[in-house]
Image (cartoon, rainbow, N blue to C red):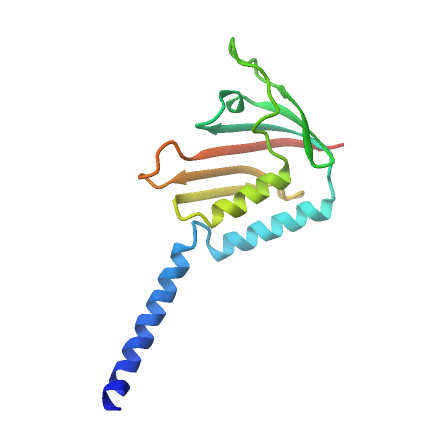
Length: 158
């Protein structure tokens, strides 16, 4: 039994260290950032806005039309129109593909916050309505063609 008495404190210390490290491996969000996300989503849900217009840009390794500021119309939680604010280059056509609703932006943040391949996740929220105004994810160096910045601005209910 003496060997077990000596080994037990070491096992407890090792278990505590592993638990602390496991908390760090869960994703790029800290507990305070998770609470900030939950508070922002609660403000958005309390506003009960299902139809709105918002300007969006998604800087990413994705469809080129997403890199241009676009006026997005959402009706009852569905993107129904996307009109470029900036003139698209020759050969580019406006498209609904890729644009997100505020709810989808929140879901994206939730998924990214649990991602183990991200190096960093930075999110800013509208102080009144709570919707995400900027979501930037930076991937670990071993992940190629990864990372993006989603910008939402000038949201108008309606």
